[in-house]
Image (cartoon, rainbow, N blue to C red; front, side, top):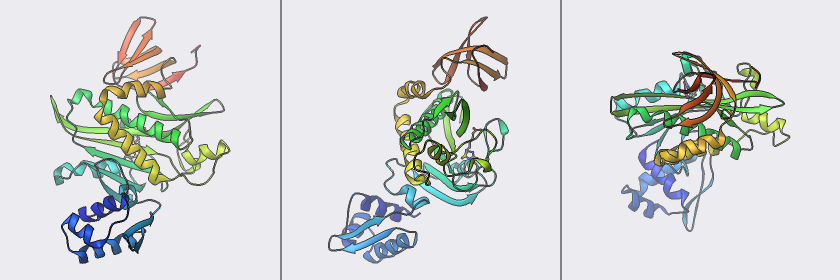
Length: 318
Ligand code: BTN
């Protein structure tokens, strides 16, 4: 979307405005405003022209302009109906000199998960990657991953699904004693010893996807709502994606609040866990999480601190 089109949407999100006012404010001709308004109508916005100017009366269900409209966070939005991986696309943005951007897709054909796993991403999910240039030392980047997990779990809760976080960043839902995966986060970065050049925080949420089209042990927002006897219709992916992006951005601005919010939504703390780490297996009770996202585990041999690994929740006796 062009900068002018985004600026028109931002202006109309605050209420109606007429052509001359918009042209003046955005420093373009009235004819240009008219052309952009027509393009927005073609993109699915219902824009009425009345005495008080242009007024948006309906927004498309999903897509780049829909996610950008009313988004309370300073990111460009780039949308693809289908793409290999939003993380791969976002990783190209630094070389293009792009501003901070969220890459969103309806479908990914080569979605990537943690630990070099594949990530199924059929049409209907919320697949997005935030490209950012945070002023953080690389050692603090795990906080952004935790922030994305918090943002996702909170947005799911707002959508009526009680999601919790398994360390470090799997978003899960428990139903009838079974735990199913709803969402995952994949963070990638480039930087030097003391400075991050860029990060890409990829968020994959099974939103309006049939769990039969996902790996075993997965669930979706729509399926969970239907099971809870709530509205079985599609969830509003536009609002959901906006909430994830906005909450993530809020956390970026207040890094000290990330771990308290993570603890609140954690399913790991207080449980017996087995963590597969590069240095071997750690088994014990997960008792806390410390900056920048280190899991503190009380084992039979004493307290261990784990900064990376695959975590499994164990039954108390295991
Ligand atoms: C995990 O293994 O749990 C992490 C999954 C991350 C998937 C998301 S979907 C959007 C972004 N693009 C990718 O290719 N992966 C991430």
